[in-house]
Image (cartoon, rainbow, N blue to C red; front, side, top):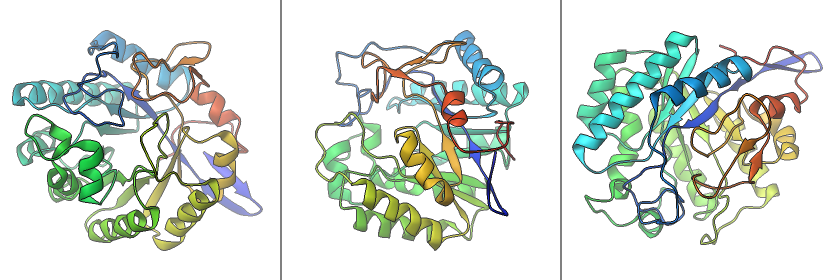
Length: 317
């Protein structure tokens, strides 16, 4: 996609998140998918439905990049089975014509990264998406738990080291970030920039995600629209190698205001296998990781509402 600003052309990427299950072994207090949440209706993966969702994203919505998401699992056999499903989904997406695939399944052990490396080599179209959420260990433990082998996301160090280890295995692109609203934002941006500096000479592209807490009651560090714009502009002006992602957690008005400072627009929904061929998209509190609104605009509706003059709304490599 392209936006013309006078004689300046800005190229955008876009991808759609696709949750293929809401099962999880972690117990993050801010997440509806947490294992201890007995109210959520669990949805197990279904390969036929996954293919159906990919077809809708690619052919109906006209978007050829996707982020595959699942929960994170403690038992090694379950983790292995999930990785095999993710590999199958990535292969299916590439075979259908997707130009880029992100995947977000939690932190990885070295042997798990090796599985991806053996299957995909240094595939440049594959992106590991993994947000540290917060770089403050005490804050991390507050929301994601102190280290416990039965709570996989509680492993702060393994999560922090996964993007670098993924790059060291030969992959070229990662997506890192923080959950804005968990902790003091100035501290987090400082640590995020340090993380970017650690990775920047080892890889070609670093995507950076800055989702604000949404549908969460137990956070204390909410960030105003004004402050949010300031940190986006700061990061935009700090590193030329990063690509800043804006999601539809933000209202259209905010996305429009930030268009000169972002590189990637990610419209979509945090519900499980939610996309349909017509109508609005369901964002049910009974199944979704978090709820923005009970009904969401279609990804193509979001993109069409933006002042982007190129009619071709495909992922732009």
